[in-house]
Image (tube, rainbow, N blue to C red; front, side):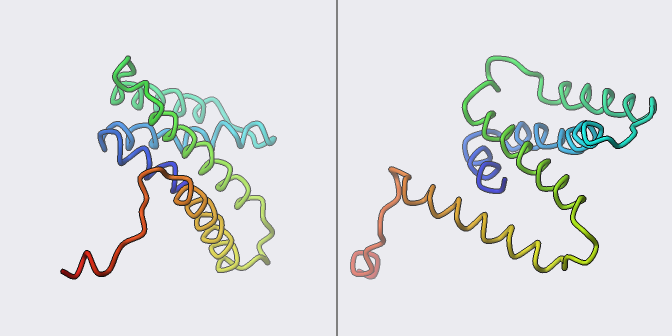
Length: 130
């Protein structure tokens, strides 16, 4: 999720990306209800109010609808998946192990994106020094 978030952040206004990511708790609640957790009427009212707030800040229109806004939405989807999966782990699983797997996943995705990026070049030490 971090890779998609940072990509969106580097190509969109920070306020827009942040507003899109503010939908994360709403997505977690909605996903939790799909997994069988009971969300009461007040909970759904809060989700709807939060979604209205996100939409009021983002003001969806042609300017925000770009491929980079999709990167922010993918980041929200991945972070939602992370939160739901982490919540379903047994208490015996150490937090450090979960963090290590998350770091390895970020490193792997970042490495693949780095190698496939057209703008990346190996730094020439001699040119930089002199």
